[in-house]
Amino acid sequence: MVSAKSVLIAAGFGLLGVGSTFAQAASPAPDACVGAPWDAFDFWVGTWNVYAPDNGDTPGPYLGHNVIERINGGCLVTEHWVGASGNAGDSLNVYDPLVGAWRQVWMSNGWYIDYTGGLDDDGAMVLTGEAYTIPTDTRAPLRGRWTPNADGTVTQRFDQGDAEGNWTTVFVGLYVPESADPRAGDAAAARGD
Image (cartoon, rainbow, N blue to C red; front, side, top):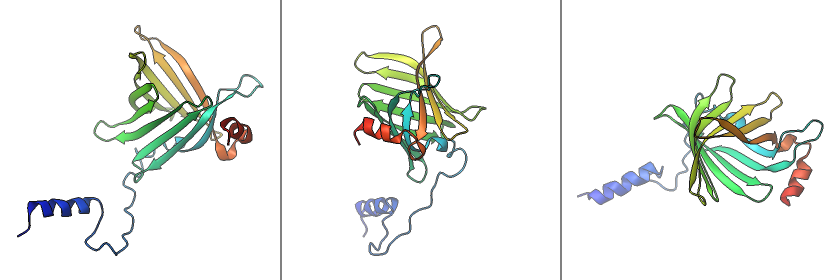
């Protein structure tokens, strides 16, 4: 007689992709999240040096380094940020089929952001939600906008809202692909690489 516990254990191994013969090599499962809408944020995937916008003929200062990867069958986009001052944070980005929108959850030492949205008519990813500052226990509306540029860079902008519904820009960063960055050596030196 097969016990319920044995059936649950067997089912659990099945869900983990472990077959009845451990010696056989299994081929990896094909990517599950392919095509629209899963690829809408692909323009942000890469390894980036991030700078403040140029001020006339003067290049903007180095702000940080960001690695954006698409993992888990293409279903999850991860972010690993390290700022020039040493601050760091990570985000998880997914297309949520239950609500039909993209969602990002960001966490750093002291900041939590949760927002949703999607591509606008210009092809920019626009997410709107709320930021929470842990040390001060304060909340504020926040809108993020990631715009792919013709030269392969990406402009990221954050606007914070107030109680009257007004928005103020609090961050603008120009993402430059690390592999094509003419200032990559300076960025690496700033990171201590």
